Image (cartoon, rainbow, N blue to C red):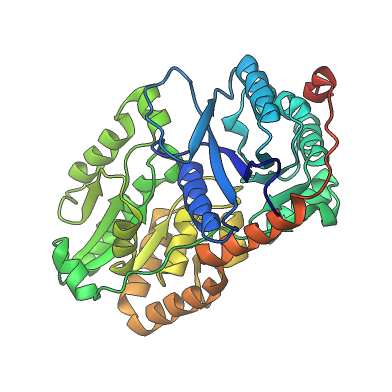
Length: 403
């Protein structure tokens, strides 16, 4: 790929992006940084950040434009701006239903109908047994795309079986993972006043859907068996939840800790930690707890980071856990009962050999998911697709109808 009419080729990502705090924003930043190191020097990357143009968010490079994806007019204006920029040769879109306005995010179809550039789209969530409108929405988006990217085999299978998307249209590229901390565990525990403690951990943006209260309640029995055990929950409250109800959920969790006299055994860390600090927390973790209440969750960066860090994992039953965990790599809970979580937490803390064996197996399973390898796969895909001629669909009205 070479320069055209003196302008370098450019790939545009459309996604939420830091400093916005959400999983997809962090994912896109990690991916963009990885791809930039893999592409030829005459190819650049820029980002169209999803958010209100009137917000006080201070975006920096590589963000070059902002689209309010909940306003159709902004979607139309952004499509026209992309069309007029001759340097943009390919667009990469991160999709989650809540990111776009209209019925089930149908404003995205209006945007795509007007955009005259080739694009790939990544579905972060693929729901099985869709209602007819959701099926039509996903089918229309997929028809327009040059390639549909998903991150798990389950999502690939569901797109084929439930949405009738052709297999050759879909590509699986896994969620990337970071390099592990190389600092000694003893040093890391000492640094955070966790020396001689058995550490159970959860991280990520807090919301009721995370089910953190289950882990807190399980600590009542775990701490009775292991008086030096502690449950460390790292993460700020999700900004959308803050906007709706403030810190009501965090306050509830804190009161739960007090009511059950678990102040010494549960620590809520209200911090959105950078990657290096996050990997340090995972390095000192003895058991990682994943208590999400969403059985249909297809991807979780927090879950995959814990696996790649070599943590023994106890997880609620959900789509990704079923695909990634076996008896060798972790424990999937059969019920939503706190006692079952406590029983398994105690069992892993009692059996150092089993816990370390699980962590090692999880680490080995994630060897091909480093951000470098994931970025290389994306760079290869972009190189294959960018030269192709693209014929856009120009009917805005027909595109956004879900019947």
